Length: 511
Image 1 (cartoon, rainbow, N blue to C red):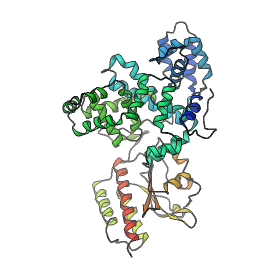
Image 2: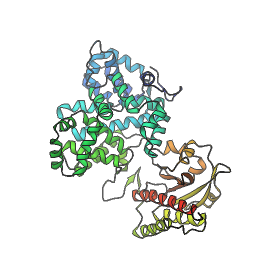
Image 3: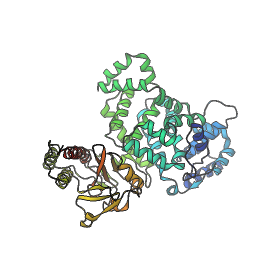
Image 4: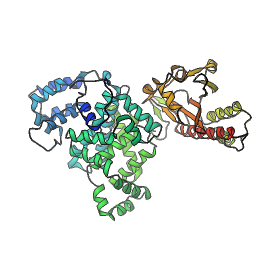
């Protein structure tokens, strides 16, 4: 196996080709952990449990040992269900040989995409432990290992093809495109099917493959259970509904489902604690635990904070940073206070501006008149720096049309479109992109410097505005570069919709 930090070959397009490609990648291990494990393997006073505990500081090493032990198990067909069993199967000498084959790197030199994905897996183990370890104490080791390795089929892809995963995130998470179509276009196969195939090829613990079976072929049962969780917030009534369907109740209460719940909670938190996707998995965890939703949410937030203390690393985004904690205070993000929400007076002004934008027939005499109202509506929802750019199709560029809170030199800004694939995608259809410390580096690198540089900081909102199926304008705004108020983010999206309506009405004024 050879270490790879970037793709040097075209991405595979078939399931077999992907398995061959990803199976041949050696994942790097942080140098400090590599040295500790090497020392532990040659120390006769160390037990297998001691060595396994040191190894768990590196998810990549855990995966490498587990798959090596299961692929070369000497006729044993049952996958190793713990790291200690895997080390025992390999023996200390073969484990040491495997360790020597794995790249040893300074943590900051390991691919950020890989470190980010492994941190999500570590966060999932913390959620699994905090939520389910006491209830299923005898199965704690299965829960811990399964939750850590559930996303492991994606780790080598994050190392070899990080841009593909970034593209997937942009299109599916931020633009809301169909996951199935996007994945077939990018990878040639569904990601979930690829993960299941790799998990089976590596003979990962049975709970991992069961988890993928749930996500692929048992989603109808998942929808039934979610409906029960949605329709009533009383845990007792929920349980009575579930108990009334014995086959569904037996299916849902399988211990293997805990690792899916933990990983989905960790994944959804990466994109927002208040999102419908996050709430969906919190409701399912609440039903599984037979506890009130509020209590489960509190536990989930506490687990995230514990995970951040253990697993947060330089440049890696942990969703615990986005928690409103303590609840009575403002949101603190990377050491910065989030901007306050707009005042009642501002919100009243914002509603009036939006109402004006929605009037029919259009009350605006020209485009400048309309965009002035649009700019003022954006400022009224709490934004501090705003830029509205119109597309100049003659020169294939964006020109500043309105601005506020920025240097006057910005008024003459002309941004070429052809030099940025991200800008081209944003202008292909109405799309909203939110930059945060978690994704700022990857997306800012894909934006023209002339567009990004007027907005210092790591928090930014970008929205393309379409009318009659054609993008006409780009909005760029922030609250001084610091963390954004969630109320302002929501109002920004609604304002963009009002601007789109206003543009469409304005275009039909003489029809």
